[in-house]
Amino acid sequence: MSLVRLNIKGISYSQTQNGAYALILSEENGDQKLPIVIGAFEAQSIAIALEKEIMPPRPLTHDLFKTFAKRYDIAIKQVIIHKLLDGVFYSSIICEREGIEEIIDARTSDAIALALRFDAPIFTYKNILDKAGIKSETAPNKNDLSKKAAIVIEQLLTSDNKESVISTREDFSKHSLKQLKKMLEEAVNNEEYEKAVSIRDEVSKRQ
Image 1 (spheres, rainbow, N blue to C red):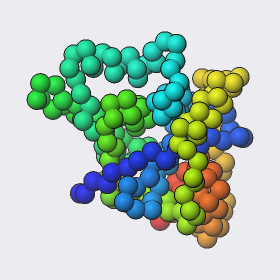
Image 2: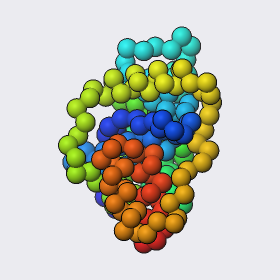
Image 3: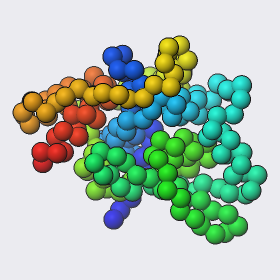
Image 4: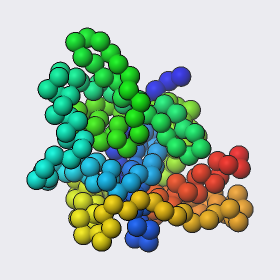
């Protein structure tokens, strides 16, 4: 199976659902995007890693892991999103120490937060991208990625519930497949990626 390199396009947050964040990965040499729903803490950690100007007063968990790894000469070489099961992405962190390679299982959000801190590339398999990727016909957003990250950080820090997680999703089961595909296209064009993830999962169940 061939690997496809992914780049981070941004982080989308919902104005209506507390804790609903979607990390948007884009195909490096293609037009598909891979939205992955993540929790508030992971969204904050990834946003801080993207926004180089912001330094937390104390190390975050992923910063601590980087310090620990560096102290013991452990390098993260790459991250691979290797499986999609029941709407959940599974990832592996490829590490190296003294020429010996190790593969460590990790949540995708944690793996990506660490990949950013080690400047490690992110990959997935083509069959996963074909299954879960979303194509957008609109032109890419020209906003600077670090500005998007700063917005997410500000929203998280001013939230009354910083530890909230995704609790409920809109029920799309009553819509027809034709309606769902149209709604999916509209959600992507409006950059409502957390909504697009839910619609995509419902479409996948029926195909």
